[in-house]
Length: 223
Image (cartoon, rainbow, N blue to C red):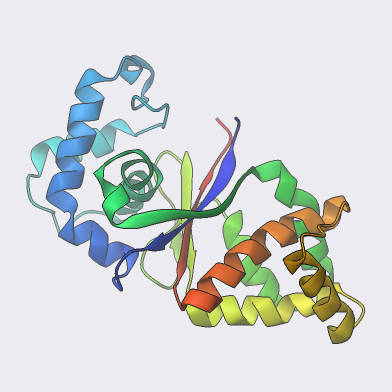
C-alpha cells in the first residue's frame, strides 16, 4: 500500500494527549502484548508492520503508570504509536474513528507545491502539518519523535475553518472556488493532479467543520 495519510475524529471531546493519558494502561498492555507476539520484532516492527523504537518498548516495560518525567522525543514516539497503531488496529478504535480518504502521500505532493506557491503563510503552515517530519504532541508545536516512522498531527475546528478559507487563493476567485466545491458535492471530481490532494483534504474539512470536530491524522514516513 505504501506510505499514506490517515485521518481520524475523536469519539469524545478530549484532546489526543488527554485520551492517551487516560488510556495509557490499556495502550501499554496492548503494545507489549503485540510486541511479544510479533513475528517482526527482530527488525523492530509491531505485528502490523509499524516501526517502534526500542527505547519506547523499554519505557513501557518499566513504567506500569505513565512517567511524567518522560523526555519529549519519547513521548512523541508513544503518541505516534498510540494514534497510528493502537487507535487504528487495537482497542483505541473505541476512542477514534477513521474518516475520509486513506491515500498515498505522493498523491498530495502536487497540491502541496500549489498551496505553498499560492496561499499565504498561515494557510501553507496549516497544510504542511501533513508533511512535517515530527509529531504534534502538545496542542501547539511539533517536535521530534524517535523513529520518525509516523508523523502525528491535528487541526482544531478553528484551524479547519482557516484552512477552508485560505485555500480560496488556489482558485481564480471566490465564486470560481464555490462553483468547484458545489461540483464536488454532485460527484464531479477533478482530474488535475495538482488539485487531487486538495480534494482529499476538503473531504476532511467538510467532516470536521460540519460536525464541529477536530481532525487528527498520522502520516507514515518512508522506511
